[in-house]
Image (cartoon, rainbow, N blue to C red; front, side, top):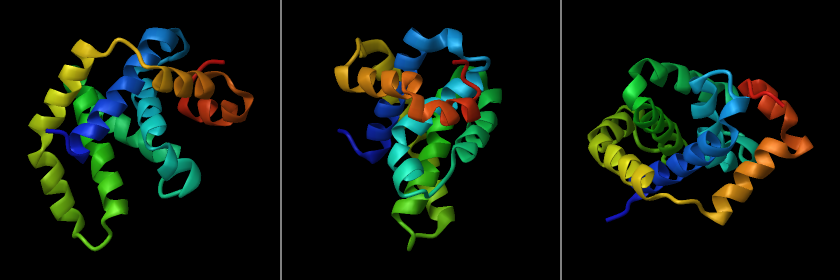
Length: 148
C-alpha cells in the first residue's frame, strides 16, 4: 500500500536514478547528487512556495552521506521530515520526526523496490533533463556543485 512516505521515497529515488544514470559525470560528490534528487522532488517547496532553500537540502545530504550504503534512505527520511513539517504546521515537530523514523523500514523498502524496478519514465527524465540543461537553472546547478 502506498502512502506519502513511500510516494516521496519512490519519486526521490527515481530522480536519483535518472541523475545517476545520465549525469553522474557532472557531479563532484555523491552529496551533491543526493541533494539534487531532493531538490527535484521538493521543487514546489523550493522554487514556488520557498519553504526551504537548496542549501537546506545540501545540509540534509551532508548529514546522510556518512551512512554511505543507506545514504539515500537517510536523506529521504530527512527530506520527508522537513516536507511534513511544512505540510502539517499544527503537528509537533518531534511527532513528525518520530513518525518518519517509524516509517524508515517502509521508506527503505520503497527505495529498494524502485531501484530494482525502475526502467525510466518520460516525466522524470524530462524534469531531470530540463533542470540539468536549461539556462534558467544554471544558478541552482552551481549552488549544488554541478558542473556545466
